[in-house]
Length: 285
Picture 1 (cartoon, one colour):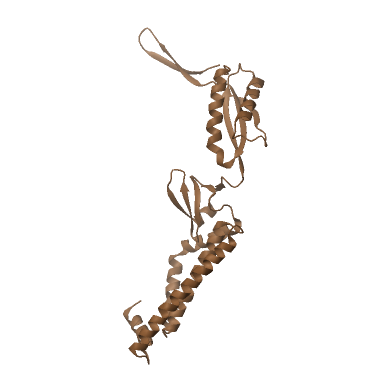
Picture 2 (cartoon, rainbow, N blue to C red):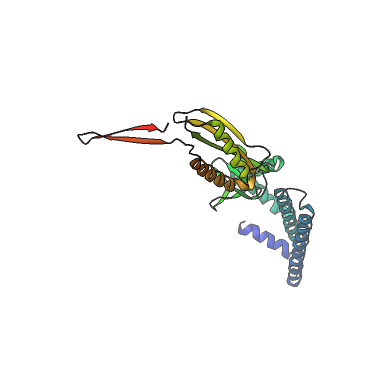
């Protein structure tokens, strides 16, 4: 706002008004604004309590934001009205500023519209673990313009809503259970039925593996170093690392005890009489 605009506002305020009346009006306006904020704060608290458990956290957050901005708008309108300020000048300036701001904020408007799509689709909620392209973490908040997440290495990342709409999104914790897929090989000489029975026994003994759905044992292919196996286990979504670490340790220890060989790539080096070494890659059979 330039000095001429502020001068016009001050002239509107002083028109047919004594300094004492101006002071009285300002004090009354401040008290009324505080009352408006207090009333809308109480409304926010009451609505939040009433909606708790009935709608998702992000929808409740958007409702609280809507109530807050409504209160702020009413407070501003009351200030101008109570002080007798001519609204036409302000609205005219706001119209021009709005056009300029609209061109400058196209990205923000796109993110705002994308935020409404996220609310309607509900692909995730606060507390879910999500992955957007190569960024993964836990959702902290879903705002009008962006989604804020905490990555697994405790970094704060803000992702614009527009980016989420345009990207491949994976909600890791959408469903209560998940499946862990383990892929490894055993040597060609091993008895595959014996390997299968041992893996099922380890799954039954593991406290993090679910019995229903049952584990799955599959023979993938004949690989260059052995027979490729896929072993799948179901678990509650919060036990990912507990299951993965414990079952891998159990498989390694049990295979060692039962002399079941997991083939691995190795390098043989041959030293000639002239001291020159030759190497070639080979695999345990």
